[in-house]
Length: 252
Image 1 (tube, helix red, strand yellow):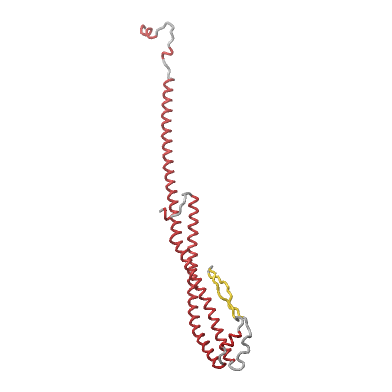
Image 2: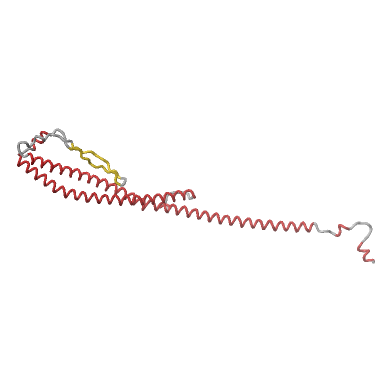
C-alpha cells in the first residue's frame, strides 16, 4: 500500500491538500483527454487533406509534364536558357506559426518575387506554350508547398498526441490512483487516531470516576470516625465529690 501512495504525514491539513491535488489531477486528466480528442480530430482532418492533395498532385504533375513537353515541341529546348537566366529564386518560403489546441504548428508560407527574367522568352515561337508550362509548374509548386505544410503539421500533431496520451495515461494509471490512495490512507489514520483518543478519553473518565468514588468513601469514613469521636461519654460527667451514684442508688 505504501508503494501505491505518496509519503504524507496524516493530518487534517495534509488531507485537505491532497483532496485539492486529487481534484486538480482529475480536472487536468479531463482537459488532457479533451485535448487529445481534439488533436485526433484535427489529425484526421489533416490526413484527409493530405490524401486529397496527393491525389490532386498526380493530376497536376501529369499536366505540368505534358505542358513542358508541348512547350519543348513548340519552342525547342529552352531549359538551358532558363537555367542560365536564373540569378535568384522567384519563390521563397517563410515560416508562420499556428496554434491548434495549444500545440504550436509551423506552416510554410509562400513568398513570390515577380521577376522579368523570362519576359522575353518565347517571343520568336512557343510563347503561349511556355507560359502555359510555367503556370502548370507554378500550380504544382503551390501544391507541393501545401503538401509540405500538411505533412509537417501531421508530424507535429502526431508527436503532440503521443505526449498528451502519455500524460493522460500517467494521470489515469499512476497519479490519480496514488493521490486517492493517499487520501484514503490519511482518512484511515485520522479515524484510527480518533478512535484511540476516544478510547483513551473513556479510560481517563473511568479512572477519574473510580478515584472520585474512592475519595467519597474515604470522606464518608472520616466523617463517621469524627462522629464517633464527638459522641458524649458518661464518665466525663462524673465528679469526685464524695458521692457514689451507683452505691447511693443501690442503697435506696
